[in-house]
Image 1 (cartoon, rainbow, N blue to C red):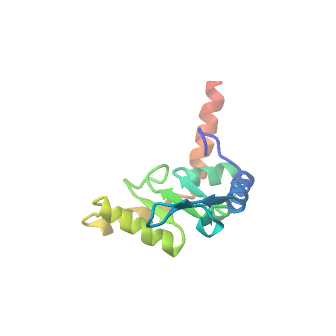
Image 2 (image 1 turned 90 degrees about the horizontal axis):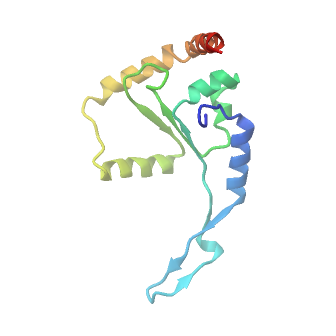
Image 3 (image 1 turned 30 degrees about the vertical axis):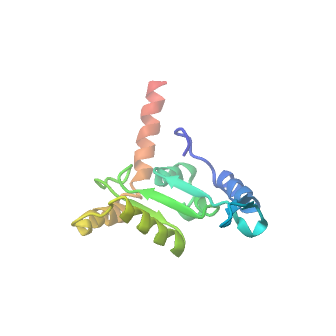
Length: 148
């Protein structure tokens, strides 16, 4: 969703293709201070989907969650927005991304005691509340229709 508008999977696919076709060049500084910019210092642009309300977008677009994320390299999922968990997010990506994210979290002092309790609430929300979003969308459309 962008500004409250659910973006179709074709939009994310186009962004993903553009990113994969685009190389980012990194300048390399050697010990003498000389800067070089070569293709050996290039890598493909990565696409991240901030999926704070991606479950809502999936329902609104009638598109499976995995299809919405197909063009992305990583996705974050919020368990509290619409799913009823009191807090929590999930980061999905390749092994290297998760390794770097865990390292960054530790550097920033991230860590939580009793995380299992919070995780259990998130798992409950995923198991029981995703399907209920369709009902929420129906009620929201009915209210919107009455307000117009």
